[in-house]
Length: 135
Image (cartoon, rainbow, N blue to C red; front, top):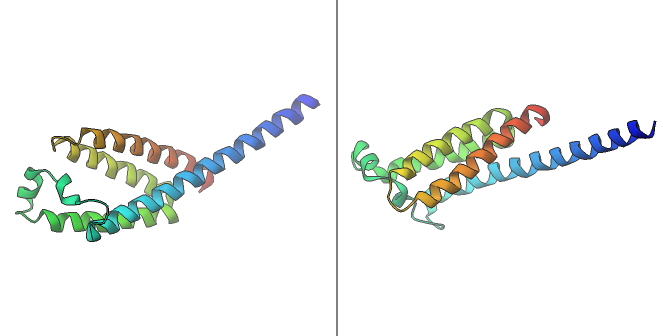
């Protein structure tokens, strides 16, 4: 009987840890995209236009800054989506991060940022998996 009680206690503890991990990831993937998206308009953190490769700027007819504003809106929507429906939007954020990684690989000097975004992508995928249970 003692073994069953210990197993239930361990299951309960693991479940709380899972819930905490879910809450931490949900918070992070809500707040970070909203802040990054808003900063596309404010440029308080960084000049986001520097992350746009010349090829992409040429594809949009030299309107790279306007493209980055659209990116900002998409990021804000994604962050709000994670807050409301992480089961879906965690995967949207992961896909978005993959696109950002591809973009960064086309800009010399930002491979470290692309690697960081790979870690974020993996975190978004983990949130998506946890959302299957907690959302």
